[in-house]
Length: 162
Image (tube, rainbow, N blue to C red; front, side, top):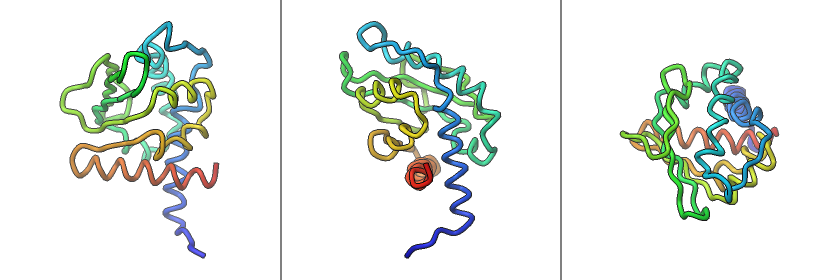
């Protein structure tokens, strides 16, 4: 039987707390793709994320600080919708764009059906289950590739404890 070191277990738990902090406090309103773009549907989550960031341990904030993320929602009614999220040194979302940001540091790819399901379920556990399979992180550059791997592995380990 393979044992997990205490340090790895702590990192996995902290990562799961970070992911849950971001998604567990999602607003419960549901807007369907037929009436609004995903950009408009997800706009409310930026404030929710920022207001709950204080609950996230500092080590986890490191993974998302100073990021310029292109979020690709694939397979919607209009094809692929791409939006941008920019975080600062404190990991706060400082810009939410209807297009990719300049100098992308990470791509997040997810299917429209997964986004619809996650919005409807409004569950941090559902998000954890989707990371690594339905939600794919692709870092740009070696450091951000490592961050993407840590996020995906951490979510996989956290699923065991969720």
